[in-house]
Amino acid sequence: MKKRTKVVIVGASALALAAGGAGIAAATGDDDARPIEGKALDQASAAALKATGGGTVTETEVGDEESYYEVEVTQADGSQADVQLDRDFNVVGQSADEESPNDGSR
Image 1 (cartoon, helix red, strand yellow):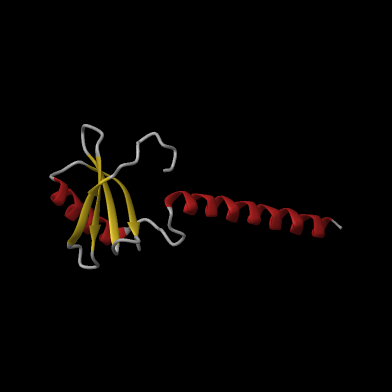
Image 2: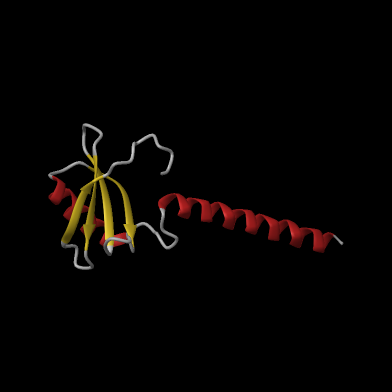
């Protein structure tokens, strides 16, 4: 009986973890969203910072609905811009991020 109980607990824990992950994905609006990593992160960050004239990279995403990469840049005044990049790190779009830094969706 103990083995069965452990399996149920592990199964319930895995289900709860999956539900939490789904909540995070829903908050970002993209079920397949994942951060940019490695060398691609360096290249995407450099391209986005060049496009915005500086700032701090605060969030990244591969497979954004608008482009291959998306890089969020925050300026010293707190304003934010989303920079969309293609697979070759060319800027294909840029927009002001209308979300408040304290909106709880991050």
